[in-house]
Length: 144
Image: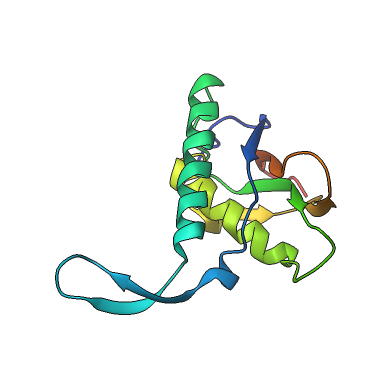
């Protein structure tokens, strides 16, 4: 499998509060007509992922960023608005949300190709807008 754009690093920003997908599952009603009840991500999570994928796709097209198909490195700075009360999502669950949005947008072919999440962190903010600042890059052959 050849590299799409070897060594090129691409940056993106997703606005809004990144939710933890893992903590948003619950019993939901699916489909139309006859009710089917199952477990799925919350409506709020689905809305965030859809909006995040749209923002990513726009930035991908405007920046002429190809779909990354090879082993990929990801670094995400998740600026999460937190008042100091209540639960805080863990970083790994937030990263899963970002990976799913990248795949849905077509920035990466599949989230299983992410080999490294070096430098990722969550930052709790009390002012400013919540967002995710991220970099993705295909890993070149022999890189560590």
